[in-house]
Amino acid sequence: MKQLTLKPGREKSLERRHPWIFSGAVARVQGDPETGDTVAVRSGGGEFLAWAAFSPVSQIRARVWSWLEAEPVDGALLRARLRQALAARAALLSAKDSDALRLVHGESDGLPGVIVDRYGEVVVLQLLSAGAERWRSELADALRELTGCACVYERSDADVRVLEGLTARSGALHGALPAAGVQLREHGLVYGVDVAGGHKTGFYLDQRDNRRRIGELSQGREVLNCFCYTGGFTLNALAGGAASVLSIDSSADALAQAEDNLRRNGLDAAPAEWQDADVFKQLRVLRDQGRSFDLIVLDPPKFAPTAAFAEKAARGYKDINLLALKLLRPGGLLASFSCSGGISAELFQKILAGAALDAGVDASIVGHFAAAADHPVLLSFPEGDYLKGLLLRRA
Ligand code: SAH
Image (cartoon, rainbow, N blue to C red; front, top):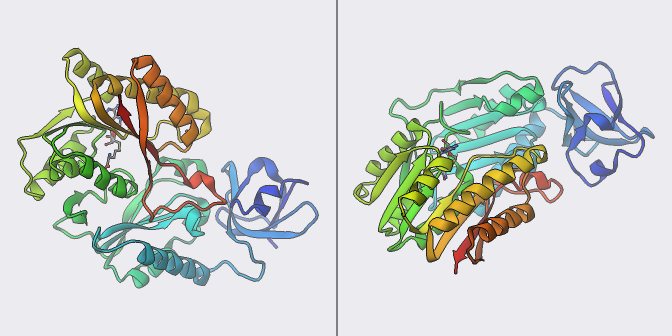
């Protein structure tokens, strides 16, 4: 019997249904489980707590698949979980809004380490944990069957795989990517998506609702979109009637895709200005040029994957927010995001308060942003609540 026994008193988090077992909580492992194998997790007193996937090199030594002793972990269980995740999306999201959505959001869907995004007829699977990796072919087969999509493409190349002792892998698992490329539709706009080489699985689906909100706020405004990637906020601002949009990113590939996306939608290119630059430096250049804006979006990459990076990340967030607040005209709006798991919403608000103070401006919170409904947050797994944002209005 493969089993993992916890140190006395270390069953508390599992009793609250948190799905991670850290290495420091483990008293002993029996039965010689291999990476990804299912182990029975027991309390120090020998009581059954959960079935979990074993990951021998990770700090997260095991991730829970099931809380029920009578529920075997097999292809049928994973298929049932996938079916539940798909049903939850169908009930939450209207196909009118988009044909691209996150079908599976890892721990929050009872599938630790499994991410599945759908772009039209292409399903992208990302496996981030030893347990997810163990069930790779079962997951790929079930996804093809349950979605009916011809192509299931794997993008298991995120950095976090290293922590699980896994190497990077990507490529088609079923079918092939369409020769003409992948395109998605969202809020009446279309985007080309680089499924094979783009960030994450190709697109930042979590910002869907927030892109619409920015579109609604853009009428007649001069907009600055920092960290624009493939132009999500830029296109929504232009479609929403922005007077102009300056978009900045340090990736030439992302900017090329963004400009292509602008053309795909037949939007007027004249009000769009693109800068291939480091935002930290470019905000200073814009300040020195005396430029100012009515609406600024700051959507930087993850500065703090975990709390250990919080202090350095906090300095980064403060720097760009301070500069942005100074570039804002009185009455202007700043939509400022953090997708760092290591920065709580409370800390993020404090960082922005510090930035406003040092910028010498008064600002109020006039809105909150979070990830879209296809990125649910399990109440027992607050780590899933990584994307936060505030809409500030400069006095
Ligand atoms: N807002 C986008 C997603 C932003 S992802 C959307 O809705 O789709 C973060 C982006 O920041 C990436 O495109 C990355 O290339 C860019 N980036 C990272 N560091 C940067 C820096 N220092 N300066 C400019 N861009 C940067």
